[in-house]
Each structure stands twice: as C-alpha cells, then as structure tokens.
Length: 353
Image (spheres, one colour):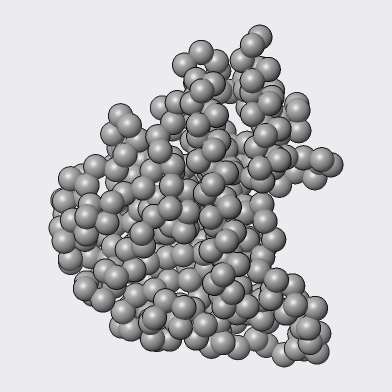
C-alpha cells in the first residue's frame, strides 16, 4: 500500500436503487411517484429562460423557501432547502452531530445514515427494531449525541405515532432530534408542530416522493430560526450555490398546486390499500405501511428467488441483503394501477407453481 493511502477517507458507500435502461420495464424499486409533477411544473419548464444559466442561481433559494414557508405556515427563516433530502440530511449530520457520544438510529432504516456517520467520523449505535419491525421508543431514552429516524420508517413503511415521537423528544432535549419525513404525505401526520414546542427538533421532507420530482433533487428542513441559521452557516461554508436555477423554478409551482398534490397522493394511497388486500389474499405478510411502498415476505417462497424471477419478467423491486433478518423481504413501490395489476397477475400465477 502506498503511504498516501493511509490518509484516504475510506468508507463503504451507500448503494442507490438501480436505474436500469430496459424497455417496457415496470420499475417498482426506488419509491418514485408513478404520476407526473403538477401541471405548473411543466409550464415552468417550457417558460424557463435559458439565459439564466449564464448566471449563478440565488444562493438563498428565496423564491422556493418563501413558497414552502407559506405552504406550511412558517417564517422563511425556518426553512432550509438543499439538493434532495440526502443533501439536507448530510448537512444536518455535519452541523449538529459533533458530540463524542454516539448518535442513535434504528438498525433497519434508511441505509445512508451509517454511511454519513462513518464518512464524518460520527460515533453511532443502532437500536434494533422489535420482532414486528417497529421502533421501540424506550431504546432512545439513554445518553447520546443525537437521534434520527424516518417516519414512516424505511424500508418497513411502519408509521410511529406522534405520541411516541414526542416521548422520544422529551427524553432527548439536550441533543438534536431529526425526524426524516420523506414518506409522511402518504398517510401520516407530520411532527412539524413540535418545532414550535421544542427547540431541538428538525423535520426533513422531500419533493422526490409525493411531489413526483425525484429528478429535480429538492429537499428541505424545517426547524426554529436558530437551527436553520446554524445550518445555513455550514452550507455557505461548504457550497454556497447548492440549488440550480431550473430546480428552483420548477419547485415553486410544485408547492403551490395543493389540489393536484393532494389528488395524486390520494391516488397512490388508494392503490396501496387495494394492493394490500390482494397481497394478503395471496399469503404475503407485511406490517401496515403508511408510505408509497410495501415491505413484504411470504412463508412459503423465497424472496431472493422471487426477486430474480420478477426481474426476468421486467418487474424490478428492491431486495436488501443486509441486515440478515430482512433478507427474506422485498420492498415494492406502489406504481400505477396498471403496473400493480401486472405485478399481481404475475404473483397469482407464480404461487400456483
């Protein structure tokens, strides 16, 4: 080994969901919304002035920040926008998790958390989900350097009650508590009101799921003004121009069209609830998901083999090799009704074999 390699920051990277280039593919592996963004987004795209690309974008992302603040009934100084929620979460780790004490998050959760912790040399300890893949709030009562968890959790889809979330916050008022709400619009109640009640709570959301804009890479955090100010200080010390001009221009109409947003979300929810009934009738087992995906297993067939056989049929879902206890699960994104009907037809025939 060359001596310079001793100084390389070596990490095991996050593995993103596959983005295969296959014709007629039914893509149910990365929890994208199957419906297009709001009509105003397309209009903004067509109207975008290409001359703006000569200039740097607004580093404060004011137009989009203001639109989000108005939507949620907040001050603009309580909103931070970044390049997808991944960028926002990475900034949060960098800004707030600097104790020598370990941060806490679930053992089965968004697999970027341990990557950021390892990369930034943040000590951490994972807290095992219970036998039903639920977070145990009591595991977060102990001394720590910060707490983060998704709600609903990913990849399980399980929703934690606001009562349990507040209980976790009450037991951790000396550290930052981050609630990652990437999927909250698909059936949960946001913990956003807690940012007014507690000075250490940060809520993170994204345009990638419910707003059908994964390709635009827009995420945001909401908290009290002091926490957002700290976050912006780190952002401007790291990269002052994080959001590109087209993303800002497209994000604003996506926020403002509340009617289209709610209609699309309800369509996904209706499809999810129908598919739950169908899968249970086929013998699949899963916890009640409040996200835009289902995390399923089956007592009589191998999920590893089913994953491969679905792929042969042009249906891509997500399989996780680690940790071992979820190896026999598949995460299935809720697609269009037609896509889910194709999946269900395949599964009916598959289970007859």
